[in-house]
Length: 210
Ligand SMILES: Cc1cc2nc3c(=O)[nH]c(=O)nc-3n(C[C@H](O)[C@H](O)[C@H](O)COP(=O)(O)O)c2cc1C
Image (tube, rainbow, N blue to C red):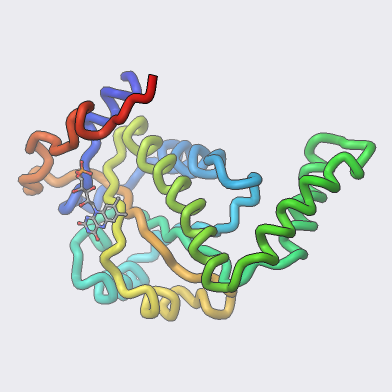
């Protein structure tokens, strides 16, 4: 199937069957998400992959009882770091050098200074907002990859972040939940599955500058 067919197939599933997502499909979704683009390539987010049924039940209570939390098989929790520091930039630069077998690390000095300028120039709250934008791009990659794998998903912001952070022990890890993505299979009971997509028309959405 083409990407366009996949995107037409997908919808934000409200009811799921509880069926297990095969490991190869989950792996493909996680890998596509890992490969997502981010500003500078810093990937200032971490993704918690929850399949534990008891934890999902607790999360459901903190997500206003929404069915996807327990009827999905796996829930991805996109989190951002509470704080980004120079050490994160240093670690990333070291990774570039190692991955690309660079012999002259000084070639990255300008790039490093730019990243440090961004990280140091933002308050903790601004950093979290910036990191959150990057996490949402990863969410988009995950959504498209799930559609390609014919795995249903529902991006969700309707949850209590403070409670999620507590349930998942994120405070100790210096992480903050932002958005979640339950993954599973649509239920025949989900009336939304067969409804037409509602989207802006091309004319409404795009402003072409020629
Ligand atoms: C960032 C974001 C947050 C969302 N939060 C929720 C949510 O908490 N619960 C829910 O049922 N759907 C949620 N949705 C799903 C949207 O309502 C859905 O994507 C939208 O109505 C468009 O429909 P479609 O994705 O089925 O084509 C969210 C979607 C996005 C992108």
